[in-house]
Length: 189
Image (cartoon, rainbow, N blue to C red):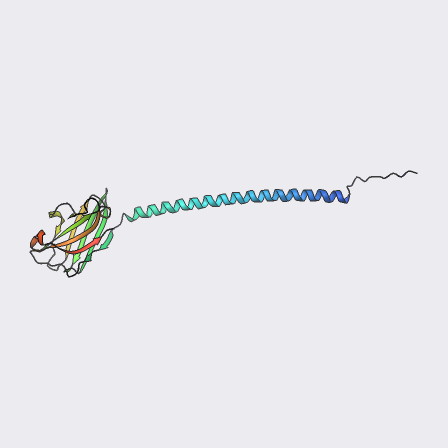
């Protein structure tokens, strides 16, 4: 009698384990590839978001700087030792079309009727010499009222902070430039 072995249509346990291992390994590799790809896409989106925020931040800084130039800037003038001035302020404000208003308000000035004051500026370019801020002696002068308060105002064709190093106020005793005395100044740099 011959023995015949019938094979079962069901795979053996060993074959099933091998197939399961292979399927599991393929699933793990696919999972890793998908995970790494998703991470790369998320990282790219994060970098793009950061770049966008940086661009917005730069734009905001530029807008803030431009906006700041549209406001009046008060600058305290430093009184010079021994001179008669209690308080002096320089105000710079854009007036439009590239022009700037310059106003100096001072108190505690020598209000003798024979005295005057002149506003001069030290240029940032060239010889850095001192000259009347408006380019003209007469339009750069002012007088104090009987209470010792003085007010000077002029319109310049450019921002004095970019044109001048220093703005200075001189007392002209007896209206004479030869005996002028520096009473207050402001550094614009």
